[in-house]
Length: 393
Ligand code: ADP
Ligand code: 3PG
Ligand code: MG
Image (cartoon, rainbow, N blue to C red; front, side, top):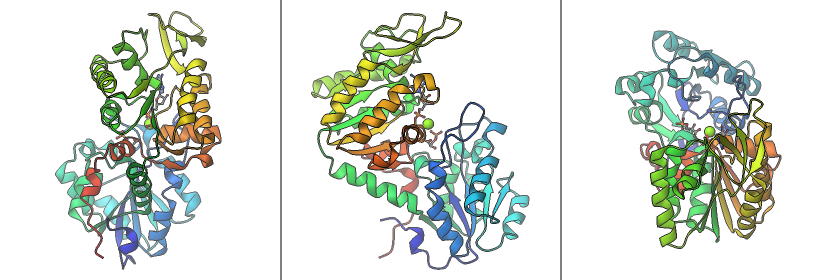
């Protein structure tokens, strides 16, 4: 059991560096689409504030290449201000004298949100000097960034080893819920995979097949699998390296009697149609791009979900941000929510989609993690939690 903030005795006046995962989904003009990851963090922040800590919050947003105005955390500071009026400041600087001075002048029980940590390339490189600079800002490090605990970055891994540390309430809750589902899975165990981070998730899928009975694949994740079966994917996203992993996975699943179901129809557009009008099709010809699963696929997936004892879902089944392509994801959200199974939905976009469907309260556990949730489900530990001290009992 990891040491939790509840176990820290004297927080008054202490500078606490709190790593959160406020990597929220944004629309195409950069507005926040879903605040789940921020709202889920409020209990931890509140606890630290009420005990008089100086709370320095650090998070990433997106995958910027240097400074990008659309990925500034300024708008997130405005959301925090609604929860903690008069207590929130924002710092454009992440390290250095200016931010140190700002921290010094913070009153007890107030909050300083640092700018997007990924504006520094040293973050993802887990640069030792950068981690040391971050550590010099605080007395205690708290990791509550469940969604990014699978990434060994400076603010999630490097800095944790340089300060007394603990986890926050969100990480604690996530670990309890997910480990419980893995230790006692109710069968049949169905996993649904979708989304866009195919290169990350396809390796996870390879391992999860050991645990699941049935795997349903949609979204951009489906095309390498269709291609591996020599089914045309037209111009839909599909990298050759993913096709070779998909081929291996399909072979392995067949040998072990596991069921993998892929889309049998699609909502697609034609690249040679100037109006890009969506239509339903079973076959993707060379000018077509698939953007959502079609009605026959929804029924096929529904029949498996109805039979499931446990469903774990990561990744939207289409480009759900666009109303023209949200139908597949919304339909599956409704089916999962209304089925009798134990259900976990994980991932920034997946949770946002389920919230949009209006059925979020019928999901057993909404996880703020995507890749991190999947890593835990695979049976792996999360490297950024391995470096957190154990609780002394
Ligand atoms: P999560 O955040 O839930 O882990 P991802 O970040 O992997 O999920 O994927 C979410 C993204 O996947 C969304 O932006 C969505 O538009 C995209 N997506 C889903 N299906 C498709 C598709 N068929 N083609 C292109 N993008 C897709
Ligand atoms: C997520 O959204 O899954 C986490 O915030 C991690 O983001 P990343 O995949 O860009 O590291
Ligand atoms: Mg996402």
